[in-house]
Length: 183
Ligand SMILES: [Zn+2]
Image (cartoon, protein in one colour):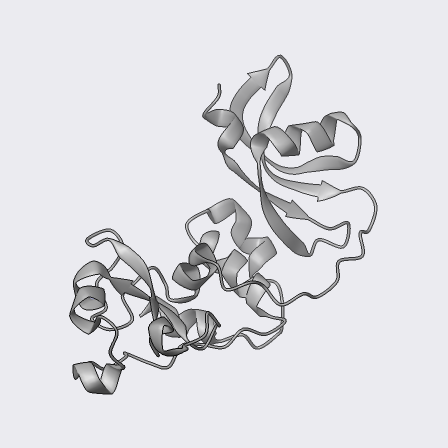
């Protein structure tokens, strides 16, 4: 049961816009309080007559400010498709680390355009050199953040969950970066 309560649930606004990913525990609380309803259910029963939701929807429209997301580990790894941006090794095969492209020891910023995912061996090879000094090349430039980034990150995180697809892919923002990172 404890694990079930940690299952990811997609939270939609009343307008069906995907807002964020929350835990099943939080989702069930919102439903119990009458703040949200189940939009898509799983077939996993958690209490009598109550099934674990996969997607919930707020009853009332919530105004959500468009904030630029912070360049956290999770956000950077997600943006880079959980792959090393130097050698392309996937997180399933290597340990990914957060890497400062222009070294932090020399004033490189912890920003969207100076951070990327790197596997441990690329990171150790590069040490506190620039890519040029280390003779290493990025597969592509780190993608910048924009007001579309939160949605892009949601798409990446929810890519494996079929029930979420209609809610994550119903926009017309022309966001083609997803395909780019999937390669
Ligand atoms: Zn690598």
